[in-house]
Amino acid sequence: MQRADATTEAGRAARPAFVKVWDPLVRVFHWALVTFYAVAWIAADEWDRLHDVAGYGVAALVGLRVVWGLIGTRNARFSDFIFRPSAVVAYLKDAALFRAKRYLGHNPAGGAMVIAMLLSLAAVSATGIMMTSDAFWASEWVEEVHEIAANLTLVLVALHLAGVVLASFEQRENLVAPMFNGMKRRDG
Image (cartoon, rainbow, N blue to C red; front, side, top):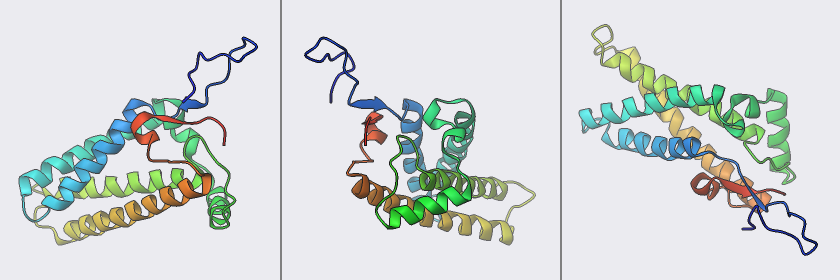
């Protein structure tokens, strides 16, 4: 990785080869969400207390991410990665033909996936909380919605992972590493 203070032979400052894209909050959020959701999924129907605690962790993280999507760093803000549906469809077509444009932050499909996952996780969280209340205790429809939303989230995770693998291959860039170190190649 080239350092930001590197200089060229002529003595001028060179542009860094890598730039910070994902701030620490985004990265910690991402891996904490993976952990809490996995624990909640594994604990479901076996360890109620652990399932509930992990579920509340997911709910808190979703709330934090919504706030950070409004006031956070540039690449974390919703305004940076919410695209028109036509742009998402066009990007997916280009990706299928291996000619998709490279983005430093979320590409249109990735942005749509963030929103889909947040909505799905919000539904899982809301119904999970509802099931612990007196008003919805043992309510079959709430349990059914909770289970459907949890399964939908797993489908979205699988699509997310497939998209990361496809985009990494297409862009010739490891897209997992930036979720650990925050850095991406400046130029495509």
